[in-house]
Length: 293
Ligand SMILES: Nc1nc2c(ncn2[C@@H]2O[C@H](COP(=O)(O)OP(=O)(O)OP(=O)(O)O)[C@@H](O)[C@H]2O)c(=O)[nH]1
Ligand SMILES: [Mg+2]
Image (cartoon, rainbow, N blue to C red; front, top):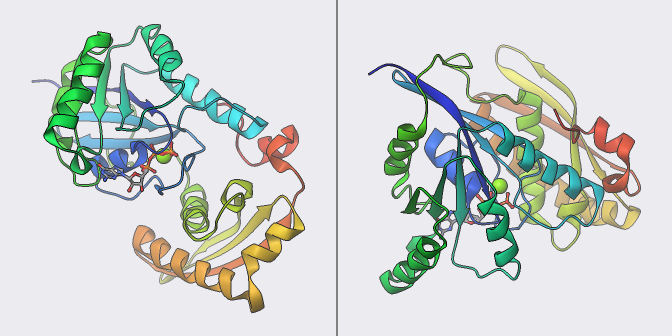
């Protein structure tokens, strides 16, 4: 058989496990995943390479009704990804969403073949799984429906094989040893943001932007300096914590994961700055990389 290559968009509501699935397929923790909704803010390409194929997955932000400009950009990333894919993976879990009917109407408009992934089956009984599968079958919008557990890597190989059936024959689009289209700086900033999402509550994770000020790689160490922007002074106080303990512990956790990803010793410095309402500021959103490609 000749070489197959193509683009696959992973879309769905927030928190259904899109990034977890991408990481499970790639065998690398490329895209950050947390229990909080709206973890992913960008379109992140993850490139799956074997001697027989190259699948360029796009992880995308969870589909929501935008309330501020940052969320508007996030939804633009979803649409762009849909526009240039050979196949769509629509992922859902067992939550029932208020706007589900609206979303289903939108899915019906997508002309690209779609595979539905029913995720998190590890948390549910066979009866529940069967009834959810029947619910989606009935919509008649998917070429295939695959029950899976991304965090347990259950059915992810089956899914990859199924994806390949829908991809055209053709040469690879990227170097066959390339993992992502994103820079090392981007991945570093995301690892730090993941730790903030995991360790802080309420609006703080949603008010944070992480920018890598410098990233210097020496033979035995990478020195990273990160600027963490928040929207208000009160958030800065929370982020830093009493005597700086909260940010110190966040930095330790981030460094641990940075060392795992880059497979090198890391020296990490963090600074916190206030940029009022950056989430609604066109200029800053552009500067922070939330502009369309
Ligand atoms: N039990 C269970 N939990 C899962 C599974 N897959 C993902 N999760 C968990 O679901 C949560 C959300 O996972 P993410 O991968 O961040 O979800 P997402 O769809 O990328 O979310 P957004 O980026 O916010 O759109 C995390 O706590 C994951 O550990 C699964 O198969 N089973
Ligand atoms: Mg995600």
